[in-house]
Image (cartoon, rainbow over all chains, first blue to last red; front, side):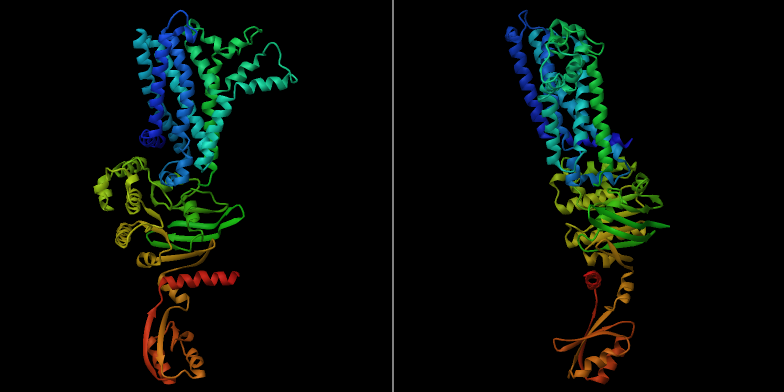
Length: 287
Length: 305
């Protein structure tokens, strides 16, 4: 149970990070500003029928999909590499614990910090929006928060796992930013490029089913699909599914795996795989 | 039972052999000094004892547990002051100690421990604002949590002023009186000389000596040095003095004879010298551990060169 003590200590420490709170402040400002814009001129955001709460929610999903990766990088990139570089890891590991407990404690502690900052940001942002609209759907909000917190935990596992790969914070920064660039910024292009190569350097008129799976590798895409999966009605009402890659392959005979629930599978993989790899590297390292 | 038992320990970092087939036994209840110049392999050895790094070959057992496979049990009974550590800047001193108490499942009073190391008035300040000496005291308080059977202190006097270093020695003795084995590394000879029962000297990853300080003095011919002022330095004076019983080296320097004496009465030697040549004056210097240390580590280098 020492992981819990480590997590508690880590939370106390990391929650005081100024960079985190600066990011939360930016998130709040952006989400309030965009909520205001959305409600004032919904036509601009593809909602000629006027602003709805579901519309606001999916608007927010787009923001959290960007905020969570960035906040996770800020909160987690130093979690293990920083302690190794400074030497505080020696204080930690000279205690009656194991590296698994330290690693797990770090993931849990940082995920909690992330969830805490995110929770406050969302509460203020969504609260402001729903006051403007004059509508709030508590069950929807609850499901949305649940999935979003899960997404935050996934990202904590990814970035702590990357941080465990090295004893240098600058290298940890490179890994974390590299991950973000490849899997979040460039990932729209990667499956396309893959398809282009597979099809003999031409693009087919119809996209094959596996393209959907390839797009879901990006954690934020998997997060979006998971939200669609838990809130199908809200998603349909705002046509959110249209922006998922699922729609892109709708014209073909779709395979059974082309469903938004696949998002959960990929989120699950992103939780487990970085954890396992990061721990294996951390456990074998000379500190 | 041995508190620490190191057998055939080797650690390589790439091409560099940091520790080379080291064997060492630290008995329960003693204060053991671990000496060596920078880069000799002291910290590497301690890091292996605490399982921060893994040995290339050999085994280490601590308090009867295997350091690699039963590290958690080792660390439950061990207090550690690591080398090159860093405190958590954003947590207070009290939060640090409370964290250790919780990790070790101990129920001592955090403030009492901070009081013992003399920083109780800074307990609720963030450790990031502590001076180097205060951090050292804080980490010592953390090492004392749970009344450990073994204290491992890596360069404990770093950052402490002479007063702090003395207080550190007092705490080491107090803990030892309560039955705690103390293993500490240092390159500050006075520290080691003042408190240690036994000393090991390590150089380039190899053990060059293990003994009590008196034993080390006996083993090397640097036991004691007599400076003898004589009236006349005839050619044969140096040679004749060197032949005397119990005399090691004899060197003429600065108008006097430097005579190392070992195992016999200094008075007898002086008396014999006086029979060879009239003694005007003399002085006695007991060699410090520093001399021993320099002698050991330099000799070793000469042998290898």
